[in-house]
Image (tube, rainbow over all chains, first blue to last red; front, side, top):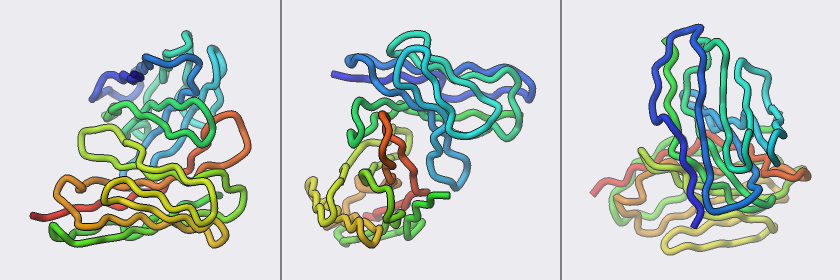
Amino acid sequence: SQTIHQWPATLVQPVGSPLSLECTVEGTSNPNLYWYRQAAGRGLQLLFYSVGIGQISSEVPQNLSASRPQDRQFILSSKKLLLSDSGFYLCAWSVHKRDEAFFGQGTRLTVV
Amino acid sequence: ILNVEQSPQSLHVQEGDSTNFTCSFPSSNFYALHWYRWETAKSPEALFVMTLNGDEKKKGRISATLNTKEGYSYLYIKGSQPEDSATYLCAFELGPGGYNKLIFGAGTRLAVHP
């Protein structure tokens, strides 16, 4: 069966520090991978998606970047965090359009 | 800017009550409408993916309907139980493209009291 792992669960980082959140998927090949963020009181916003290794598309301009070094690994990074990067980050995967998306358990990031 | 609106924002009901929520979405460029349940400290979990106007889907006590022409979907829960307490998210899937481009609403937070 397919599973998705996302870590860490919580993170408190100072402004200006780097960030690396990791997500791995098991039990499927060549998934579409996604990073979402939920800001307080808002819906999930798609930040990045990837349809294959090394292929990253950004949905919104921001201070973050994403990479996909392996088929089932998706990494969210920042060189220097801003206060506005605080939020809840979710990794997800799907295979085809109109398929349901499967989500990780999320990372709550607080930038102080 | 594409907007997906969910109402109400939150809802408190008694165990055994039936309830329903609304998701409003753009009526153009429709590809699919997703419903997810998000329990506290867990991952969002898919309930339904609906694609055709007039679709009705059911899973146990939960059902959903879809009207793509007027841009709304209803989620119904019959005989609510405390374990139904969660945030219910709808997401509008845009087409075309090779990936799920989902635009999420802010969710309806349901609390079911024993």
